[in-house]
Length: 599
Image (cartoon, rainbow, N blue to C red):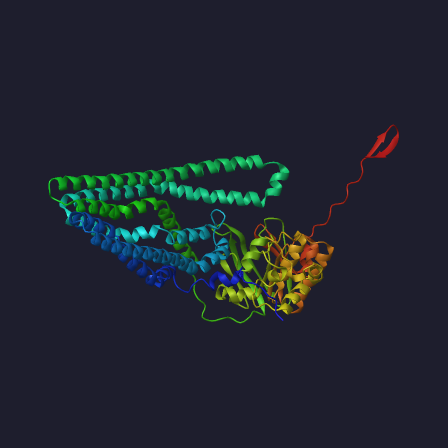
């Protein structure tokens, strides 16, 4: 019997590098674009036919004015009308096909980048300081997909046809061509001006938008504290200032693109009228026909339409370009080597050698020179004052934070030699700040493994001493935990997360403050869980401030100021580190009015 575990969330370790392609980032980007070459070729060919069919209106007017009206031929008019209508219809169908192809291109890019972008949400926070709320890469992917699926790319495919249309204008008459060319130069100049004037405010607006989202997320996360202590107005002032700066840059960028877009539209209309005026002058001087006058006006409008469209879509183009640059950088950060050999499951020891660890993006070590070795079947309690490096050591031992120097080894193999997906199966980790995923209790315990067996889930729940608590819920293991586990109490979340850490009988189990939210019953279950890890030949590292979490450990490691102060058998280390209590002060004896009293 298997438990149905839907896979909307991915196993964290599985995605870090497993789906992070084996190719270098530049090769990967080229491969993404190369895999879409057929789609781009289809868009290009469709655009070619569309631009040829766009001549229908001009030549229809040319024939009407030069043939139908002078000859007063109604059958010719009907025939030309049927042909023109058929070509317009065909053009409309091709426009629809092109738009659908672009939607497919945008979707395909999203599909090819999606796994890497999601993997970066797991990997990069432990490797570097993430700006904003850390979700910029998701928004970047949405921006690129939205631009590729919209009207912006059509301007890029139509713009190369401008010389073709301008050439036809010169074929109609030299001065008509000169007028059209002058208008094209002016519009292209407006496009360049749009790029220059909008780049800085658009970039600043994007930065401030990320800061706004970060502040909004922090406000939501700490809403109870803000409301209870009444400092919402101060946070509100920060929001108002940030929002004012964002809106100022947004308005500036929009004003540039909007103003120049309006200018380009007016210029195009003036140019179209100017071509008509030039054509009329040529007709008056019998250097052109009325059909050429009307047809050239329509032709110039079509020739300059891509430039006008490009200016109108410039804001989206700039945003997509910035997003693509960030995604390119992301691919570089996510690049890793593929492991050709899968190491066997660890079963002997954990060795830490001369470990120096700093926070992601920093070179200032928090943990310095820590070395120790733990064998299978042992449990180590890690104690020490706040900010002594205990949690940092836990993150380094589980491979979350990379060491500045030194090594962490499982069965003498450095963690970097392991395939992350395989390594994750042998690790259990209970972080200090527990958060669960939206889903059922069984899904969270099983780490969202779609092939999880019910027996394994129940075994983990029993090992964590949480089975009886779960079955008391009306829906049992199918109980939904809510966003971040909000449907459960803090203690219940911690116990479910402990079951998740024990799922699959991992060899190394690291528990960071596992009893911070537990009652007496929960602490007893924790002690039993640590004993169970030792009994089956695993290793447990338990970070704790409360002595009750150390009942089942047999060794203690003392941290202080980022360094290991002591390591060895529990009783021996604790006896050396425990300071004798000071004797209680004796009461001061006062003599008041001949009486002895205690003060």
